Image (cartoon, rainbow, N blue to C red; front, side, top):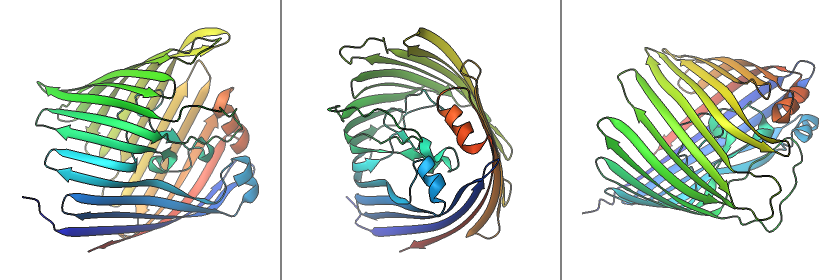
Amino acid sequence: MISMGARADLTGAARYEYIRGKEEELAHRLIIKSKMNSSLGPFGVFIEGFGEFETNEDQAFIRRSPSRGYLQEAYFEFKKDSFYVRVGRQALRWSESWSLPSLDVWTGRRWNRLFFDPLADQLTHSTGISFSYTTENTSLDLVGIGELAETFYPIPIPEVENEKNSSFGGRFKWNVGGFGLSAMSAQVLRKNHYGVSGNYAFDSAVPKIEIGYVDDTTPGLTVKRDQMFSTLGCDLFLGNWVVLPQVTYFQVNSVLGTEYQTSFYASAQWNPDRHDVQVLFFQNPQSKEAFMSASYGYNVTDYFTASGFVQNYAGQEGLYKFYEEITGGLVVGLRLELTGNLAF
């Protein structure tokens, strides 16, 4: 028997940010967010979006981040017992990893926003249909995508015409003797993605591994673009601390040949009572890229949070080089956020 009880939650937030680089103002903006989650029996609707209003138009032009609205997610859902289906724009994150490359094949990035935003606002999501069936120890996910998530850059990139903008894939997960294991396969544009991941949950630590391979089937390639990566990490829960170290070994292909690089990532969060301290570090010694961020926030009330952050960008090539040129390397920011919730 299906219950037809109705429920709706509406959440809104306004976030003000002032961000300054080493020599000049980088952003002076207001971000308005809203989220609705409504259900009637087995049927549900979820919508989330935000709008950005930037007063520093020169910097917005440099970073290709104009004032505009963003629809993060918008989907219809049918859920009954262990089965659900979702249709629309939705988050599909199958990765055990916190940095790229990973098995997060349907998520785009707002690289043009640098790393000013919280992680959830940095991501973009694909539009399509997903099915999921879950039992006590296993789950099966099937996905068909009609519109892939868009990725935004702070620099012009060549446009690809007549590119197939669809995708499909599946994942199987199972628990065996305390281990969480998964295997996935997906076709994205002209690339076939294959991957496996595993973890084991101790009381205060979850070690994990993720391995992926990409088979590029684009015809007429002059450079072999198959790729592989492997990631080792661990989620540590130490009292009020959550620490996430990770190392990734991956293949990079170019006209100069194939090379292998290693990236290091670590983040830590401490949030007792109303305090929130976050620290993040990333480094790739081969490409000479590095990023550091530290922030402190305080929940003045249940609805108002004030925080400040400092960041540093360094790079001799690629995006991090542009980030350092745009920011001057060192960045400081002030963030004030007001939230509210209505349930009925």
